[in-house]
Image (cartoon, rainbow, N blue to C red; front, side, top):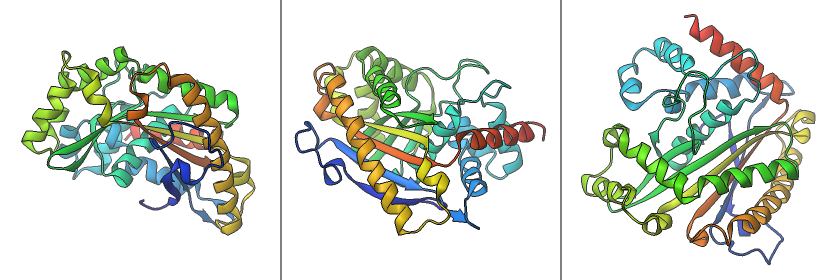
Length: 305
């Protein structure tokens, strides 16, 4: 993973949970990353630099990203103008969405099929459906299709996990998947990506409105990113083993609680649930409000360039 993040958990979920009765479990994966520290503090500046270095993945389409590749100032200005920023906007949802797109790019080598911020219906409305849409090319004959969820919470309590489960369940309903497929085939971004021609034809056939979702679901992955305020992180001064071990322990607890809830909600309600892969990404931060305020201020500055 690109600095400033360090991957501290990247394994099947069954390797970190103490619960032996959860089923299905083989389709679930764990990812946890932590930001760097400097001068006894969580490195807020490095976090935001990473967000803005990767904003184009979701705020601009491929054509604009390539056209503005040699004009970074214009790229940032154009991307900032596509953000949902208002004086009352304190949710930080787009921060989590940008972070998810950057993780998909750097950690999974994924191709952004639908840059969601770019394709918002209007300047003050989030793109509907999944928070991210990617394709991972495994080889010339195989691919995986990723529909993501991204959240930013000031707590990671059980009530918050319930909301994440509801969002994931909603994304996996047949109507929502078909809607995402229709959006993908209705724009030209898919054709602009570096995908072998034969595989591209297969992908389009599986996304076709008349194709059965039963054929697509074995290719389906759901990355679930939860950026969350963390007391352990707010009290830490160093990224040392004591800190990392505490975060790992917290992750295992929260991941187990989350997947318990997801199984209860989705196992019998989402057809072919066990064929879909889920990737839970938890990223701790010390103070949500501080992060959101800096993000909004930078966005307003870039818009004025």
